[in-house]
View 1: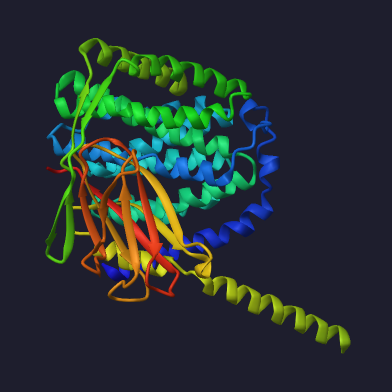
View 2: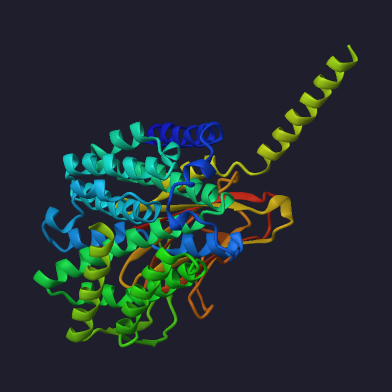
Length: 302
Length: 145
């Protein structure tokens, strides 16, 4: 196992160091010069540290896939974005959002051990990434090999998160951090969509709360997107997500603070947060959030 | 000859400058150690480079949105097997300390944390009693109750 990690990390590092040469050969400015409003640099400059910190703080959509699977809910391919939609994505704005969406779908398929679907989604991710001229940051041969077996998930995640971090740095250096934010937004929206779809057929308090909890993440994403609202495509997305936020404003979160307790278990420190929180999402709130996410996603994928 | 010497000189300067920069903090090798420390059932989620820039940066902080009901684990590693002096403090969105890896002067290399409230959490790494300003951490999660 240790050896596998070493090889994978080395592969990821090598893939990263190789990208420098690649990116010199294929200047991003050229690649982004296609007619696409998202590619135009905005006048607002965000501190790299702030941007990077917020991007890093957005949780992995994979958490939701595990949560759904651990609840015994069956794999549902029909909830995912169809591979046949790829041809529709002809702007960087759509490619970035759908790169995020397909990445979430890839993770979902992998968590469920759906090897063929996972491999198909690797292909979609590659196509979107290549279209954005960031394909050189992905070691697709390694990713494909790892995606073919769900027991390799940790290694797959290490490689993909390392790659994504390199992409973030690269896009920031190129003044194209808006694309990083769109990738994140697409990934988050797909995870929200999957959760909403599951709740419809499997009403569950934990999932309902998880949907309500997305209020925090939506707030962070809006903060990021607002930096780029001069871009007409992002302005439209921002308006849609701001509408969704109005539904989230009705979600009530109460917290009763209690000190956490700590104990040592097998040489590891185990901390339990004893605070009690209650996230209240009414049926109406849930329906509105679900409809809103479906509507925004539909605009992005179709 | 003079040109050759200059070129050699420039090469050596660049080579050693590169070596020094590279030697500053090779956190990747500690990431492997951190991953190995993740307990069974936890899925790797994120790795963090903890680079104190040779001591000029006493604190390195990252934020992450934790979700209620999820079990998280943070593992740490640096050159020292006992991790002496490498401290992790976890603060909630109100900047209240909810967990620390330092208990009775012992530095634990792994903390498990069961989140009670969804929100932004701050993972703050400090170099308390160490001259080694390079480490790595890994965040994993487990959604099972």
